[in-house]
Amino acid sequence: MQRLFASIVLLAIVAGPAAAQPAPPIELAIRCDDVGMCHAGNPAIRKLIATGIPFSASVMVACPWYLEAAEILRDQPQVSVGIHLTLNSEWQHYKWGPVLGPSRVPTLVDENGHFHATEADFAAAEVDLDEVELELRAQIERALKAGLRVDYLDYHMLTAVSTPELRAIVEELAAEYGLGLALYFGEQSASLWDVPPERKLSRLLEILAGLRPGHPNLVVMHLGLETPEMTALVDLNNPADPFRVARHRQAELEALASPAFRRALAERGIRLVNYRQIIARQGLAAMVRPPGAPGYSMADEEEGPPPG
Image 1: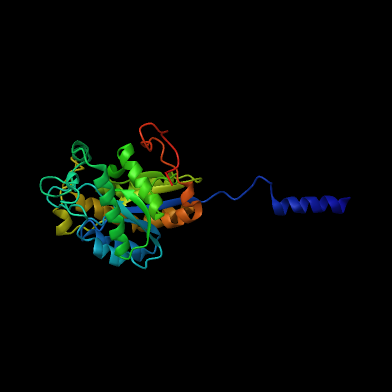
Image 2: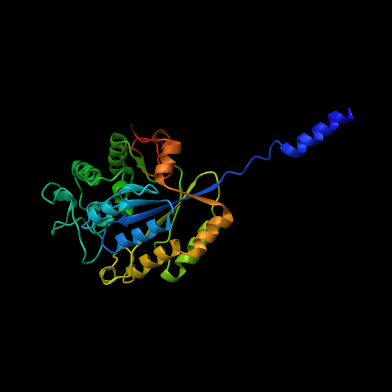
């Protein structure tokens, strides 16, 4: 009897309480948007790649510097590449237009042949949905022809998913090409876009301190270098601080590359993941439209899996 009791005690010590399971890890996905938008953003991506951390990069293939971005991102296993579906050209003097050219999609452009500057301008233009589908498909095809391994789609300024009908087009294209959709995997998202440059790092550390396990966490970043090219850009989306885009984007790069960021990851045991890893684990069939997003049509439910 004594030997039996001792064995039970020993087993309890070794095994511990049945409920004491390892805590699930805290996961964080870093998504860098506007890649290829201008030259100064591309060497910033090189610098982040050099740190060795896994992240996701959303490329604007309608913009002039996408080919350089594609060259940088090819054969980078720690980087998951997405297409930043683009229907706006929002800078004051720096502009771009559709991949198909303005004559093929005339409702998508302004009088100068550029994409509409704001989402409000886009909405007021009464765009042709067939033209939207043609242009977004052309952007996907351009990315693939550039040799990029594309894992997911996301949405510049959210314009491509700003109505139920637009979201339906994006969902159908994702299903056709076998791609994931950003924010369809339960990600809890945060951004530093409107944080003053001097507070970028402290805000990033605050976000890390508040992360919880059980779902992917996402931080959306916009990286660049403080060069004359980027300093000349005026951000029409940020009327409170339109003239410091170069400083904003340099500060976001510095925050991600900082020892303090790495130390905070280690101290909390946060595991960095990218969209390729999220999709591989959850599967495309697990995608669910984000709560509060427009439904597949005006008559459909607000939430549900994307078509296909």
